[in-house]
Length: 185
Length: 179
Image (cartoon, rainbow over all chains, first blue to last red; front, side):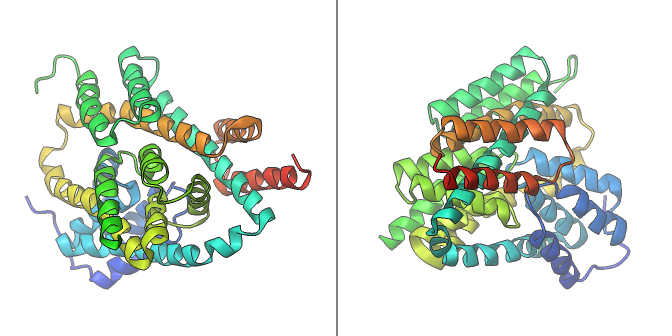
């Protein structure tokens, strides 16, 4: 079934939209903004289509915001649209990484700036901790899924097992645990 | 040495790309282990510095990989690192985007969604532990880290940048007073 496509969205439009999204994406929380850009303003896809893409972007490995860029790009212009969207998302941040890498040693060589940077890093670890706690809260007081969380934490955090092995072993088990009772495969 | 480093980047980052469920947060622990402890690409301090910088720059935090690539092999290293981190997961996402509509609404669809949460939770917590150890641990680090997490729990809509600045100020005062 082909999705109705009223008009061909120019690749330049896709690039422009995602370039700005990429450049202003600070510390997550990007989904509502992308939604506003592509659903409300540009009407490239319906809200329902967007939400499906969002779920997909979160389920798959990779960065959520670039994943949904690929999804939307594919929706409006197929493979070319996907490539355009992800390149646009990464252009700004990559250019800034180059600038940061070039200036990093000079700037952080100054002790009081280094001290401040240390504080930023630790506050950022706190934000990460909050993300972890939110995920645990999402699981709720269910023993088996929490056991999966602890097992993954111990395997990766304490024993340094290979991440991909841990994910490949833990994910199917976790999905089976979440399988609705009585449903057929 | 150059080829060895570039191949090393691909070998380390490409699998992490496919394992990064929930984004960059999932790969901090193994990335730190490989880049700092095993391969000595960056020092513990550099890794933490990069991590802090990514928070003040736009874009996905996994651009941390590009910084490491730049450190060991310059521009080419940054490009190889970025491609290694994004290409595998992006190709998978592209394939999935094509299949998605076909299988929507099935029971397994929901189960996959829900089943990934506990795995992501464990990975994020492992990342917190790895970064906590990198930053030297101790009371100051632990207090600021727990404080930020607590404030975010209490004030959900607070802009994260303010907490980062607060963290910087606390450490600045500690530095100036010689604590």
